[in-house]
Image (cartoon, rainbow, N blue to C red):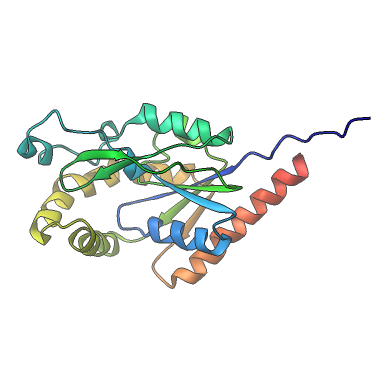
Amino acid sequence: MSAIRHAPRLPLLVGIAGGSGSGKTALARAAADALGSARAAILAQDAYYRDRGDLAPQARAALDFDAPSALDRELFLDHLARLRRGKAVRPPVYCFVTHRRQGAAPPMRPRPVVIVEGVLLFHDPDVRASLDLRIFVDAPERVRLARRLARDVAERGRQADEVLAQCRATVLPAHTRFVEPTRTRADLVLDNTGALESVVERAIGAIDLALRQRGAES
C-alpha cells in the first residue's frame, strides 16, 4: 500500500499597510526577524512602481507617485497569486532616484509566512482578497512626516525641501483619500508611536493565531 502524500501547506499572506512613515516597513522587518528566515519572507509593494523610462527625467519627477495608478497592479497581483500557490517570484528592482526599474531581484521563494507591506495594500479589493491577515499601522501625521523626511534623505538621496514639498502636494492628500479609509479594512490596527517591540509582539501574536486557525481547519 502506497503512502499517502499530503499537499504542501501554502503560505499565509500577511498584509501590513499604513501611511507613509507609519513604520510599517520597520514592523515588517522586525516581525520577519522574529519569525526567522526559514519561516518568513517579505514582499514590498514599493518595488512595483511602474517603470518611467519612457519619460524625460524632469517629467518623471513631476508625476504623482502616491496615487494607485503609479503602481504596476497587474504584475503585483500576478506575483501575489504565484506566492499563494507556493511558487517563487522575482520582484522588480526599482530606483527611487531615477524612477526606473533596474532588472529583477533574485527569486523569492515563499515561506510559511509571506509578509507583504505597502501604503496602498488595502485600497485595491483584489489585493485585499489575496491577503489572509491584514494589519494597519497607525501613527499621527507629525510622526509620519518626520519619519518620511528622515528616510528619504538618508536612504533615497533626496533633498529635505523636495521631500517636504512632495508631502504637502501629494503624500498627505493621498493619505486622506486612499490610505486612511482602508483602516477599517484591517483585521488589526496597531498604534506605532511607542516602543516597536510591543507592536511587533502584537503582530506576531496575530500571525501565530492565524497559523493555528489554519492548521485547525486543514
